[in-house]
Length: 479
Image (cartoon, rainbow, N blue to C red):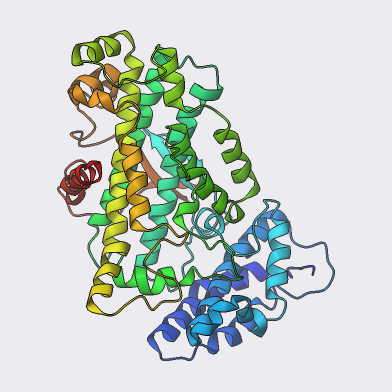
């Protein structure tokens, strides 16, 4: 089937998605309107976007906007259909029978994007293309950014709730930090930078600061007041339930499909047994360039391997005494910089685990204990891609027990000074610095805006609610 977009079809559909669709979803979920109302009203809204008939189709930019919009519509169609009868989960594609041509039309539009986009909504369309452009800035200068398919500065959600707005913002801003980290590390592997030289030290120190910025962003998210943040009930019973299958075995959108996060893991040597099988299971939910990039990174050595080999310790640092470790760091400051970067990466992992416990695993465990069970069309006992708490704990442990963990025998301030981190932070360490040289924000109407979440102040190192909890999680995982 060929798809033609007539006139301002994406504008009209955008208006419906931003307004009436979110209200319709809310009404259906609260029981004031029947689930059958969604396909009926959606049919009129998408008619201009999926008229059928032969045509050259839209250009890539318009196709991407329509994929975002129709992805949100498709999620509503699939969810409400499956919630009407649990048996509908066995044949999820039947949800689209009430909108003939929707699945074929969506697949054709996905092809017109020129990105290899799958024939359903994805992480890329739901977050990266949907939200306004983002940038990470370092002392006010652009360091890295992610684009958008839209120029309206808006953010499209399922129900219009602030919970969804803040969570989508967190995901895209975090990915922007991750891109900045990956672009900072990449020349150590591919760009002719000596893995033990002064530029590698500078890059690893900068990566550590960027990772701390990302950790603070996630800590700030957790510290948001209830009326401004993500409610547990909304996350479990509203937001996650839109990540349903459209066809048996397809890959619904999930934060686990963030390609920059996967690349960051691989670059920093996080590659435990089974991790590449996990990545392969995610590939059908990624774009062509994301799949190609991850394949390339998997074929390259990790930064720790390059640095340790260059410093004459390819087998690692296990078994060295404290004087030997200090002497090695004195001879090779890059080891201190890599250690601080890997520690910052581990702290991000600790906060990620804590957030997963707070909003997903912990509340669902309490529901199981109280007899409420797991009744949604999307299970809350594991992540959307199937990762449960034990698997996430294992991955967090691998990130914390990295190849330079022996350097924990040396004082952290000493290592941060040798790495050049304290010089970047005006003499402070990562945890103690009140402000960082990096920050993330959105670009709206051509102007960059720092993240302006209403986080209670004062805060300690970017979110005092998670500083102690972060240390507790790290100690628990290490045990």
